[in-house]
Length: 270
Length: 235
Ligand SMILES: Nc1ncnc2c1ncn2[C@@H]1O[C@H](COP(=O)(O)OP(=O)(O)OP(=O)(O)O)[C@@H](O)[C@H]1O
Ligand SMILES: [Mg+2]
Image 1 (cartoon, rainbow over the protein chains, first blue to last red):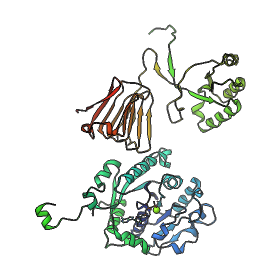
Image 2: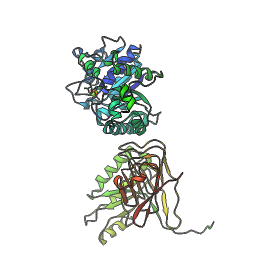
Image 3: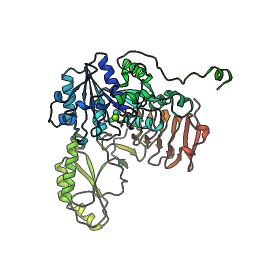
Image 4: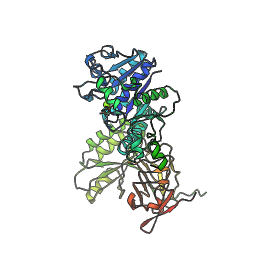
C-alpha cells in the first residue's frame, strides 16, 4: 500500500520544502519508489531544491486541467533512480487544485506502483494547504523551536484531526509525526529557543527527528542537491536518521546537545 | 408512578427560522437547500419562525404549506409585536410564542434537535461530554447543558465551553468558559493551569490576573458572590 505523507506546518519558511526534498530523496535512495508533489502553486520551489528546474515542461496544474498526462509531467530525478517530481506551476492560481483532480492524480500514482507520495504543502491554512493534507495517511509536522511556529503546528494538528479525509470519513486518524527543524542547541541553553522537551510537551505527538540549524542546508539548496546527500553535515545525517525512523528503524537522537564546554569552564563552572 | 396526565413547564432546543425580509418563498427555498445537506436531521423536525418585530405582512399560509411540504413542522411563531400580526398568525392555525434567546443554530453533527434539556421542577441530568483527544489551537468545543471533560491538553488558542463545569486532565493553556448560560455553581478544574482566560458565569480572569502561586499547578476555580476564587487541587 502506498503511503501518502504530507509535509506541513502552518507557519511559512520553517523548512517544509527542504524536508520534503530530503525525505523523498532519502526514501528513494533506500529503494522505495517515491513521488514528491509541490502543492505550493505559484511559488514553485521544490524543483529548485532538487536541481531539476530546467527540466520542467509540464506541471501539476497542467495535469489537473488535463493539458498533460501525469506521465508527461513527472520528472525523473537524475540522482535517484526511484524518485519522481511533480512540480508546481509558477503561473497558475491555486484554485486549480480541486478535490477530484488531486484525488485522481494520487490514485494514478498509486496505480503506477509508487510506495511513497510526499506532498510538500504551502504555508498557511488556506486552500492549498488543505488540499495538500486532505488525502494524507501521515503528516510530518515541521516545526521550528519557537513559540509562533509551535502554535501554528498545533493549529495544523487540529485541522488534520478535523478536516482530513480520514477524519471526515471516520477512518483511522492521520498518523502524526513531529519534525523539529533549524534546532540550535546553544540557543536552547541560552534560553532563546524552546527545547525538544518543551515542544513535545505542548504538541504531544511522536518525534520523528530533530534537524540542526546548519549552513549546509543553504549550500545544498544553492547547488540543487538535497542536504541528505551531504554525509559530512549534521543536517544531512539528521535527515538520514529521520528517514530511517520513518521506515521503522529505531535511532537515537543526535545533535541536540550544546557543544561541550572547554576544560577550564568545566573546572570552574560556566 | 401516577397515571394522571400532568402539565409541566419544560424547555427545548429548537431550530429557529429567522424571517427578517418577510419573504415566505425565499425562506422556503433556503430551508430546502439546508435540508438537502442533511435530510434525516431535519425530517419532522420542529421549527420556530422568528419575525423581526416590524409591521410588514407575511404570507403565513404559504410559509406553513411550504414548510410542511418539506416535512418540517412549525411549532410556533415568535417576534411579532403587533396584535394584528398575532391575529394573522392564529388565523393561519399557528401558535404564537414568546421569548427564546437565540443561540447559534444546531448543526447535524450535534445532538438531536428537540430533546428536553431542563425540567421546570426536576432538572434533567445529562452526563458529561468527554473529549479524548487534545483540543488544538483554533478549535472550539461546546458542551451544551452539561459538563465538559477533556482528557488531553487544551492548547493556546483553543476554547472549551460548557453550560456546566469544565475539567481538563491535561494542561489548560487556552480559554475555559464554564457556566456559559449563567450557572454560578459551575467550576473549572485542571491539572496544570496556564489558561489564557478562565470564566465562570461571566466573571473572568485573564492569565495575568491568575495568582503566580497557582500557575502551572493543579487548580480548582469556582465562583463566590461575584468574584472568582482559586484553590490548589490536593490529589
Ligand atoms: N536546518 C536548517 N538549517 C538552516 N537553514 C535552514 C534549515 N532548514 C531550512 N532552512 C532554510 O530556511 C529557509 C526556508 O526553508 P524552506 O523553503 O524549506 O521552508 P518552507 O517551510 O518550505 O517555506 P514556505 O513556507 O515558504 O514553503 C530556506 O532558506 C532554507 O535554506
Ligand atoms: Mg516550501
